[in-house]
Image (tube, rainbow, N blue to C red; front, side, top):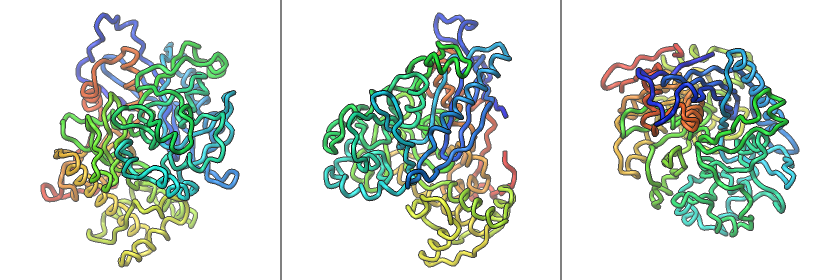
Length: 505
């Protein structure tokens, strides 16, 4: 599988650079909560071409009485992917200049002084952290937490997970992408966009909130020093380089290691006042700002202020996403019903509007298994009658997500004092024609869908810029994406009659 982002004109080379000497091949390790990929990115004359060279599954597993990530298996897949990338590049006579890593946020592994991972990392879907919320808030007032960190309250935020740990003496916490980078390079760093999701990061100062670490009895060296997107973490360890067939001077470069930070960097916006929805397992819905919004009204609305690339602020709300549908599909498949997604969406689109809705952010939907039954129960608790039918449940999910997007964007505009002209949907959800059209309808704004591979593109763009293969800030990088990606525009129903398509562009 490959895709291309192409600009009509070559991107300007950095001043004094010899274009023939500028490296143009990069590897992106892009891991989500259900799958991962290693992708080669080739950059030449303002063109970014992607080639997925390795795919692998990911998911939570029951280990030692909790829901955890099988990190050992995950890292083995990363190595296999890099080995494949090295082979593919060598066949083309290419040299991979660097590697960038992005994953989901908040989860971490604990390593000892020798660099040994002491246990498989817990998943945010494990319920252990809920019991730590009240004890943390007894030590740190929620209003004070928000005024410093600007972080949306979620019961699985890193701060609450850490509060469940019994003995952290001599240990260091590495967020998942930083843990992978450490095992590749031997260098311990914490990338800033992911650090901002921990609840222990000062949103204004851009540094660790050491007073919060102290208040919780956590050492100020619990996390490694911060690193910014575009900075070099280090070079591959000799044994890793030999194992995967890459040169030892291959760099690991920090990117927006929180996958949403990389995805937002690749939003193909040409407008200044745009909103974005990074749509996948979760929905990240918000605006890009220059400064955080730390008001009490923002806290009441449960918005988050997370770091983006180039010091931007991702002002957003973390909402439920297509996890609800994928879990329903998994349950239906076990029951012998396995429709293709386009057919399922077509059946859902044929149903009349105004049907039952649920709150996709309800914590009852966080854990896996039995999702259709939980959705039916939620609809019933809201006083609605939802048929136990895949098409009806799918339409309920789509309607509920679109309505949630509209509420969230209206709140973001009000709280940030910014009006939005267009909504960009990136990630897997940009292929969901029903969801995109419903989002246009309920927000009353045009929706521009694509690219699907926004996270990988954002990862690779930052690597390429760090190497001198591309130049400019986010507007210049986004022009490359906008000019070279096949995008689809959806107009609100009051402007153009909506067209629901079963196709997946």
